[in-house]
Image 1 (cartoon, chains in turn cyan, purple):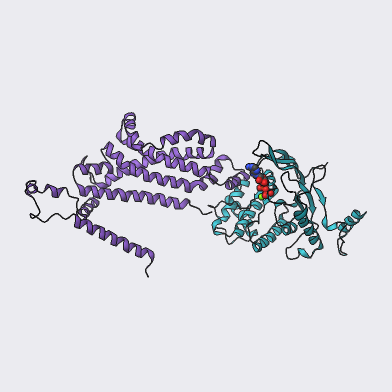
Image 2 (cartoon, rainbow over the protein chains, first blue to last red):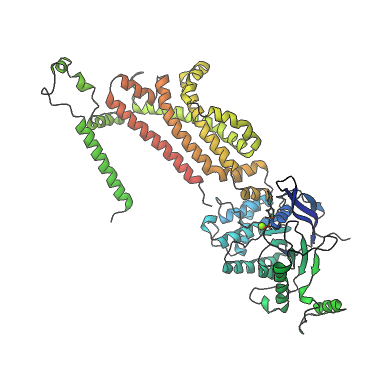
Length: 300
Length: 275
Ligand SMILES: Nc1ncnc2c1ncn2[C@@H]1O[C@H](COP(=O)(O)OP(=O)(O)O)[C@@H](O)[C@H]1O
Ligand SMILES: [Mg+2]
């Protein structure tokens, strides 16, 4: 059996329910991530997405189960995992640049001052903030703060990036712009990303796979939906791809109609779904041969 | 329309002139001879002597004192500058000693709920004790009036610093602590690079309260131990029935207190941050 880059095995989280019993938020979560994959997780509020992400980050502990990355069990926070929080979590007394310098210095303590600064500036440029290096977070808009936060996470070049609804607090226009930036940064770095979102379009634009979580209590990652749209993608053109609409319809249907009753495979792993090559849907003539073959296989 | 600042300054000056004018009028000596009873004549105008002096007399004295603040003509006759310097020195000595203890201890208490619970009863009992109540014990144990005054300053300025440091440290946003954790900072580096700057505004608020209390207490402490200092000076001038000097030194106590607060206020500005 070939080991994946990241393996999550039987993760569960229980809290005392206040009446002597236990309340299981989520149970027996199993999934694996490959190196370089971009995976989004969608589910209704309160099902435990943030808790799972915090366990991966090492900031929270699961009640049962374990997480293994690169063959080593995750026991606490570490620099090989970068986190972008929904509320940015920048240090407000430091300038944008110094927030990044703080992270880069922690990652490479042996680097010279100049090298640290140069490296940090490079990442701020990548998110288009070279004009705001010396501003404090309070002098930046929400979108700019989240850019700094993203730059900080990418600057330490973690093996796994964890993003918890990074654009949740932003207006739609800003969100779109930063999504495109994230696409292009990821195109360059090809880091492994695990991201929580509640935005279906965002998930399709960014991910290779989308995990769908059923409602709590006792929530599960019920399905793993393949997004069969080639990279590089762009917000302006992605909706022209027929796979986009099929995937979108599938996700919305899950969230609206099936999230209460969905369940994973018997062995606890998520059901693998490929909406774009589903037998029930007609395949467009210009579809690529791979999905054509998949469709044939499904019909047979 | 002049700016708000200019108008406020004009108004302040008018209040001052009005107050000084009223004061001056209220403290005029009664018309010579006419108003005096036989008894008062016999007393040679002693009544006139013990009147509150008019502002003009206080200003005259202030001018004389401030033009030579550091003269030293024996134990009972030193310039106001020397007396103030003694007081400031005692305040700073006690205050710095309190800082050396309160900041690290506050950090410890703020970071460890166990330490907080263990120390809390002592703090709650010791904090409400008037600093002057320590004076006899301090005099007995330390056997030195100067050091005892410094000890009293130490004991009164330690509490606001300790409590504010503990509170500031305990309430650092968990997000920022998580940033330190995800970047694998050790406990010491987390304390210095994240918790200290995050809690600094709260800590400085405590330090500012402390210096205010210390300056209040030093006057009373010096009245008790005597010898030198602005508190002793006020009491001494009262014993001499030199009311002009008493009023002048009261004003100086206010001015120095304001300056001390100003310095801490500036320091507070330096560490402030907006979220
Ligand atoms: N201390 C706690 N005691 C009981 N339940 C908790 C506690 N902390 C979190 N929860 C529950 O855990 C669930 C998962 O929370 P979270 O991971 O933030 O969900 P999501 O990110 O998917 O919205 C929530 O339903 C919440 O009520
Ligand atoms: Mg959440």
